Length: 133
Image 1: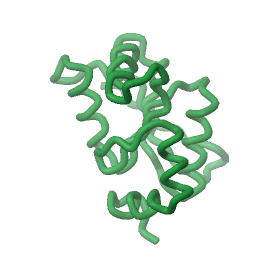
Image 2: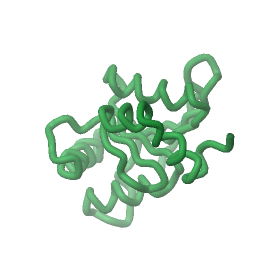
Image 3: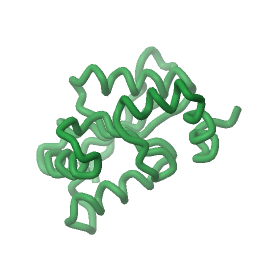
Image 4: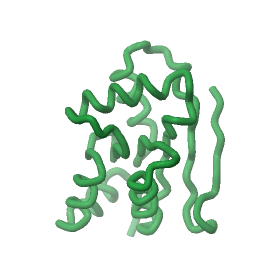
């Protein structure tokens, strides 16, 4: 599997950016999403040119969280299947950004921001081991 790491946004946040999601033992995209989501404390499914995706990545980096990011548009072989699976999981047409914390689906940008505003996001991040303070 091809992985590529990048330092993002002036070195203040280290994100593991993964672009190849197709080489998995399972062929079901929903199972693949669940498997990928459980590999790290915070997983973001993103499209590299999406402003909402950029905003959610900035939110987590600003909190000191180093998420694993799957850029769906960077994987021509498996990205579209994953995007369709995410749309089925969310039940709407907007598939990205989608955030998983501790392997659990949090949702799209609206759910992440609501959790941040109502104070439930930080405890989720601590429970998943993404924040220590």
